[in-house]
Length: 187
Image (cartoon, rainbow, N blue to C red; front, side, top):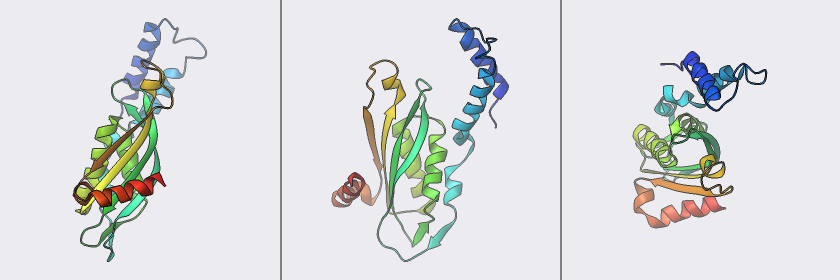
């Protein structure tokens, strides 16, 4: 299924009218179409499966974890349709010598973040895609994000960072290993 841009355009026109604006005003006349194109882009992860990017992996004797950190992301909070953004750090512990190409982890992050999202669910979806596809011994996903719903409205606290951790397998069971990864992320 693809995005219905005509429906989005009509909805944006209605929103503009509802807030007391004139959608035919020069500065707003193309806004509905621009918003429709933007929504098609920022929600493109709804129509993509992150696991497909993990199907190709390399057989490499490697009995340690891999950490890809500081993956920049942008997403949209499903509660207010306002952006949240920050960095994702992903550690996985290969099983059966299955090592994925390093660009695949950021691809998974991109797909999962391009959906109406909750930060907690986003970490779980990233981690589960890796564990289920690579059958890894464990995964740990740390997300640090600033939420515009906390900056622009409500509490109005710019700079407040929300951190979440999702972990499975060895990263959940072995506290020393978990702490080692957290120390590496902190730098």
